[in-house]
Amino acid sequence: MAFNVLISDPLSEEGIQVLNQQDGIHYELATDLTPEALLKKISKVDALLVRSQTQVTRKLIEAAENLKIIGRAGVGVDNIDLNAATERGIIVVNAPNGNTNSAAEHTMAMLMALSRKIPQAYYSLKHQQWDRKKYVGVELKNKTLGIIGLGRIGAEVAYRAKGQRMNIMAYDPFLTKEKADHLGIGYGTVQDVLKEADFITLHTPLLKETKHLLNEEAFEQMKPGVQIINCARGGIIDEAALYEAIVSGKVAGAALDVFEEEPFHDNKLLELSEVFATPHLGASTVEAQENVAVDVCQDVIRFLTGGIVQNPVNLPSVPKEVLNQIEPYFNLAENLGTFLIHLAREVIEEVNIYYSGELAGVETAPITRNTIKGLLTRHLGEHVNDVNALYLAEKRGIRIHENKTSTTKGFTNLLTVEIVTKSEKRRVAGTLLNGLGPRIVMVDDYSVDVTPKGHILIIHHRDIPGVIGKMGSLLAQYNINIATMQVDRADVGGDAVMMLTVDKHLETKELEALKQLDEIYQATAIDL
Ligand SMILES: NC(=O)c1ccc[n+]([C@@H]2O[C@H](COP(=O)([O-])OP(=O)(O)OC[C@H]3O[C@@H](n4cnc5c(N)ncnc54)[C@H](O)[C@@H]3O)[C@@H](O)[C@H]2O)c1
Ligand SMILES: O=C(O)[C@H](O)COP(=O)(O)O
Image (cartoon, rainbow, N blue to C red; front, top):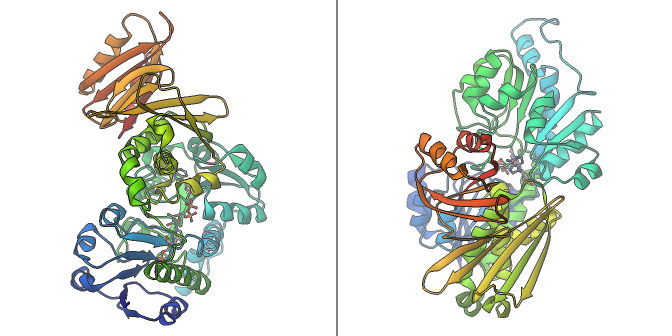
């Protein structure tokens, strides 16, 4: 068979050699295509190889009649419309391990250059100025490095910064005490990191949750004189807020490799002498480029020749006959996972999934994968899929147990998911009602009946007269319309839960206002 491969971003020669060695592969290297020119070419392409520059949009994917696989020679897939690719059955693979070292080294280079103002001092020398007073730096030794996102790159940065005798304070939603102790670092909430760090470095993906993670409010919480490094993704920092924080003197310096808009020829931040930057060079080393090019080309060849890929980002692969039987449960499972992660107040150590009634007799592994996918996506982003969900959970030390039980509590099928954290267990159960679709029927020990869809608000409160009224008036003040509402309680005057569906997404300030009411212990908004 013959396949056309289009390489639309610069790719290392080593990767191209991998393509050359395979019979039936015709490749074209075209790295300067305009979006319009790429759109014209794409219909004849079987495999598209990109880095971060090519924008693989829905429009491009929809025009790609023959496209079977998109290979990303690197980690971040935020330039690829994964939903559009999945909808079209196009597999996306990346190369997540090949550039970890280079990105960590680049971060360290930025950190050291920042602390000693090396780019600024060099620039002044180039302009015939010999100024020793202006470029007095600070030592890294005994300073606190705040790391937000302790995945592959964040952890490598932590190792290296310890070599500089820095103290590390990290935040990652999957960072446990055990892992922090093993690395010999401190950990806390994101607020702890913001408050305590002398330098802050970002290593999260760009997700809905991390967009503008460093915003005006975050800068306010930081120490005066803090310095910022971003070698992850533009957009994690609100650039306008960073500009103001530097002008006001709160932030003493910033070293940036990535930007909200790339490429650019003009960025206001670069007018400030406290800022220096590189044009997205974190992975630009000979070694990293060889690694990622070889990894991604090998995966593309494996896929095109009928093999199993090693780094799938979105692969849905379930045999047809099994799929027909269990597919209706996938959405319910994913929604239960998403629901529970919002209730988690601590790091999740264990997940127990109970299959009851009809469900006890079917192939449940793909349903488990969808549950875990729902649980992890909030913090790990869109690259979590039913193929890699269990692996990602295992990497984070989360134990997963499937249980088949005969207890159905009156339902013909019941899927119950429980998370276990250091100090509590939280549970949610759902069912597929014949002809009526999915329902959430239990939250912890409370009975409810809610379609898992839209904007859900769960309020844990004390069962006393007036609390429902107060809650209703407060929502009305914020112009939030209640669509449906149910209440259940443990005992008269004891703990109770309200489960509401509302017509719009609840903002943090609105949830905080609810929590200010004496009778309310917890208010959680979930968008499904
Ligand atoms: N500048 C470059 O050239 C370059 C090179 C490589 C990678 N990157 C970028 O670096 C980022 C991280 O890469 P990685 O390989 O370490 O990925 P990774 O998946 O191993 O790590 C990301 C970590 O971020 C954590 N996270 C998610 N949401 C968070 C939040 N709200 N707060 C704190 N932590 C959160 C995740 O739990 C995960 O542990 C990616 O965006 C990637 O694209 C940039
Ligand atoms: O996500 C990544 O792997 C890095 O940002 C590298 O991007 P690049 O391949 O465009 O250098």
